[in-house]
Amino acid sequence: MSKMPSERPITSIAELLALAYQIETDAVQRYTELSEQMETHNNQELVKVFRDLARAEGIHAEEIRKMAGDIDLAAQAERLGRWKKGGSPEEADLGAAHYLMTPWHALQLALTGEKRALAFFTSVADSAKDAKIKDMAAEFVEEEAEHVNLVYRLLRKYPQPADTWSEDDDPPIAQD
Amino acid sequence: MANAQTRLACKPADYKSDIKPIWCPGCGDYHVLMSFTRAFAELGLAPENIVVVSGIGCSSRIPAYTNCYGFHGVHGRSLALAAGLKVARPDLTVVVASGDGDGYSIGGNHFLHACRRNIDMTYVVMDNRVYGMTKGQPSPTTEPDFDTALSPGGTGLSPFRPLVIALASGANFVARAFSGEPNETASILVEAVRHPGFSFVEILSPCVTLRPDEREWKNLVHPAPVGTTTDPAKAARRIMTDDGFNIGILYRGERRPYQPRMAGQTIDLADLEKDFEL
Image (cartoon, rainbow over all chains, first blue to last red; front, side, top):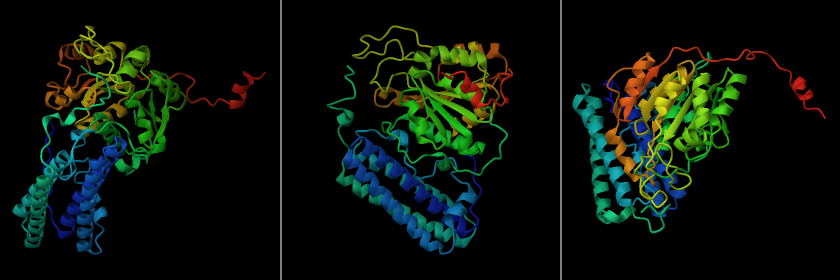
């Protein structure tokens, strides 16, 4: 419904790293929330999938933190204030969750997030004037493209479920 | 209205408690919680200067998920509790959370009179048009043809019109939001808290388990085609004729909030206790 305001261009490597770090940490937080929801509703298969996704994003965040050296990425991201009210590219949509969702659905959420991150870094790489920022953004583009491919590979293991996936043999209530 | 306190540089996460929500995955109330914490951060209020009061129902679990002061009260009586609290402690920011069953049925009478009294607080009703916690009975806002084993053929009753009732009863701020737009909802909540008097915000919050059809709401909501008005007659006409999916601040009144004369007086607890001595 709302339009995203145009963002200030990235002007330093530190800013780019801070945003990349924020994307990954926001994703960790959201996947953790989803795994906790699934835990509450005893969908153990999805607990594991979301935990694995959170762990994978956490590894990416840690890699970026190491690249940044002494830069305080969290503080830098806070100063930038981008996605302050949510909407970070890899944040999965809470509204898309369902207590009977399958790994295929979880991976669809992950795929959407990875594609958004890919689009974000592509736009940074395309628009950056500074060669160093352009190069680093291009590296992130390659990484995100690999993540997209990884999700596609995982989806081969988890095919789309039948349309009846949300039918509950023991529903919360008998709704005729 | 937010009280004159030092504005803090808090983040939304600073208003979340360690208790994990147990709503169904996909429930709109997760987004409402997000909107609450984003609004509180935007207002920059200290968590200990906010009180979230609720009644009973899925929506009313929300105080536990914030680290503000909270009061999980009895069914339908959240507004009565909140009114007493605000009158006794006008320095606090009081936000009341309810649902369509708790707020419009069991608490319907309190709703009318809270609007009429116009005490300075914000009333948020998470409307999913069903009793979710007790497994799907029709609520006052359920459509007449909602056909289930619990209501064969539907109730056949006209749904309650919360915004119309609020306006007619004297609410000083009337708005509708959609949980799936947490940023817009947070902005509306900020305005609601800042506006003096009784602010009523209805949040359409889908129950994806018992009303899976409500997932479609994200495609039905739209910004109100006209701006906010301070004219209750204009607001009434708009609210009476809208499609129920207009999102935005629909009315901002100019009534002075009610504050009883006792406010600000110091009452010695020992004096009060004397009346109860045996």
